[in-house]
Amino acid sequence: MYQPETYTYGPSWTVPKFPSLTKAYFAKTDIPEDTVLFTIPRAAIINISTSDLAKKLPDAFASTIIDDTDNEADDDGGESGPPDNWVSLILVMIYEYLQGERSRWHRYFDVLPTEFDTLMWWTDKELDWLQASSIVAKIGKDDADSMFRARILPIVEKNPEVFYPEGSRKLSEDELILLAHRIGSTIMAYAFDLENDDDNADQEDEDGWVEDRDGKILMGMVPMADILNADAVFNAHVNHEEDSLTVTAIRPIAAGEEILNYYGPLGNGELLRRYGYTSVHHARYDVVELSWNTVVSALKQTLAIDDAIWGKATAEFDPEEFEDAFVIDRDLGEPDSRGEFHGPKTLKNLPEDLREQINAILKAVRKISPETIPDKQKRDEICFSTMGRAFELKLSEYPTSTADDAKLLASNTVSGRPGMALFVRYGEKLLLQEAINLASEKINGSVGSPGDDVQPSAKRLRTK
Ligand SMILES: C[S@@+](CC[C@H](N)C(=O)[O-])C[C@H]1O[C@@H](n2cnc3c(N)ncnc32)[C@H](O)[C@@H]1O
Image (cartoon, rainbow, N blue to C red; front, side, top):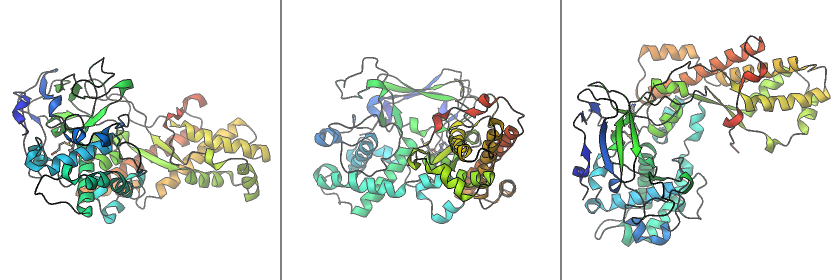
């Protein structure tokens, strides 16, 4: 039986239930910095180490891959190989859920959500509100579906005596898939990556706890800690200790303030996809993805050369060597140790990898038509003009303007999922506008030297 009394409760917070059933922690009194708000024993966490499933199906879990820490489903739906972190936790959660009252976590399942606002669950009509946001292409519902059919269903169906307690009804294939989607969404929004605090833990310990070689970590569900909501400005931190996880105030928290964790420097599109909400503080981490096809259109418009020259110049490139997409983001870094962010929140650099790829083409054009690009100054001008034009083309893919969206947001007439989508697309448009302005400043030569005006190419995106 799941025993909440095994938790150490702090005296100074409360767990209210909102009418919407959303749970959150609020400080009841002023809380000093460094106060331990609560402690969760590792034994209360749900994962392959604590659930009986791995003991009952040792072969299936013999070599779970534990270095896949991006909290995502395998998108290839591959049938072979040991289950990864993600597949394992879904199987464990399905197992524990199907045990009903026999699971020591059954009361935990009672408080987990069964409905989600994450993008996976949106209708096409609701997704239309996101307009040209690249987040729509990242939802991956079909990939998740194939992965469940390939890697989850066969294990449950081959081992009914393990998954279904005596006398319980077996789920149909459709019911199992729906359950896997629900549990997958719960894991995406609620699971923790569990670090191991034990320095010597390069082997499995007595309890079969995590193997933590080279920083490998395991995912798990952490009751109580997962009631914490989160924001990009936050005041609490989860520390991973040897036998427990502790949640600590990282700065003084005033009575009435919400206690907030941090999910990382995610833009609102990604926050919506994984967690089903948006936040003003996350807008600074917004991201726009620009396809190379859009840049090619811009480059052709900027160069205004005939097709013959373009064809000759690009013939020497292997399209496989080109990046398909580029990320525009403000590259701001993380909040400080008190959960606060300082410094400017505007775009300072244009993507270096994009500039390199445009310049590679321009070099080839110059070989064939030197008069088009007589010197480096002209090349830089063409490069920044192309970037600016590409940003404008991307902006024009959104059917409404930044001003239209600002007006709609100010009217307070759009709420729920459409309201969150409106906020995501507006943030992306603001970022594109900043990128257009920056490219224009570069063309006018008014900012920095060429070496300063680009950001490192670490953000290269491989979408092939
Ligand atoms: C780890 S749970 C937190 C507990 C959750 N509120 C509950 O009632 O179960 C994560 C989910 O809480 C919600 N959430 C977290 N932070 C939020 C915030 N700042 N604003 C709105 N919803 C938030 C989102 O639905 C997210 O998927």
